[in-house]
Length: 593
Image (cartoon, rainbow, N blue to C red; front, side, top):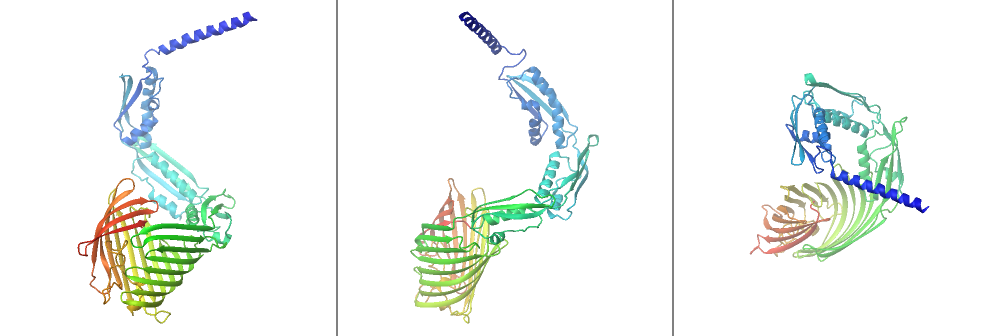
């Protein structure tokens, strides 16, 4: 037994010794004529543009194997000889069917150098082009594809353009509900000796599918309320864009924290596609709190409460409170969603405003109703508000005014990013009117237009233009509340001047505000690193009663710090129309538009 074990161990040791000798021999030996393992291939293409060169490198076997550690002369020679045929085939998708290739292979400095000199020759030209869409002849999206088709008779044949056109047509047809659409003919006939090609691309759309059953998976809201978000209904022609509208409609509303819209399997017999909408409702109650500082308002704190789901029909209750050194506001609003719940609503509201500034002291109590509607890119506001305002201003003390205001407004914002805008603009137009004969102390008509424009002048620089124009017609100016008068001066008006310190004055020389307003501002901002920017600005204008305007100017420099909620703006502005051009600090925070 011991002898058998010893014999086995001896045999294993012998095999191990022989294996080690073979491994050592293989490690020190290489195939005759082969280069060292570090040798590589360097390929050079002459006579072709970069786009074609990149395609050639992707198509050639010698390029694919250039870094292999097993290369030797026979392998490289075989790859090099194959390259000529591969180059000719790789050039055909670019329309070159009769190129000439002169190749050379040399070994130097531990590497093979493969050089390919290429003469592309005359490209193949599209001679006949037959592109047709059969079936849905009047579909605007398909006809638009046909008009934009980048294939024209007389163009150089490009196989990639042809394939992209086919892919795009299939994508559009599928997105439009032509689930059975297919090509009845798709051919390219190439005649190399004639440098010509004939293309036939014929597509049969088949029937257009329609939206099938729409199901909702959610809790908390009535189905009839959820259906008001739909930009389509069961039976409408299928369109992926309408699904995206549906998703945005739910996602942009205040009701849902998460939205998923997906389609089910198409019913080929009924030609319908079902839709499933999964919704995750937001928390019913929302509380907000914050603190801040602004040179117009001083230190301030604010808080808010919202009940997002008073009932299954989407009614909401909002309450907000703002307390500051100069201005305090409290408001309560009850909102009822309308036909488009994501953007349109009717509300009733009540509010309280108290302001104690160097110019005026006022208390305003109001109650009203608003109708907010999105009309394309514009937001329209129609409203009615009754308010009583008690105020002291200038030499006028303990005055009171009651007005029933009809309110109309339009607003539009277009921007690449509302918080940190590079290019964009905002325009807001508001009209107010009151009649003494209808629960008002005086007749009143007023219009206010506010605009802002941002344009990037370079990668780091941008220009900001701002303009405000207000016009008022009132029978008895003394009964016009300070909250409806125009003043100038402050962070968002004329920098360099105290908040509401500019405007017409009374007999005692106190600023009492004006009927009209005209303010313009020019600012240049240059972006630095780490979210900071420097700004230079010039503001001009004033509030006034009669022409000509007693305009004043303010100018200065500012520092901007970009934050997720907008920009923190610190400005040092000089009152150019005050003796000695005194400086004033302005601090604001918020979005650009």
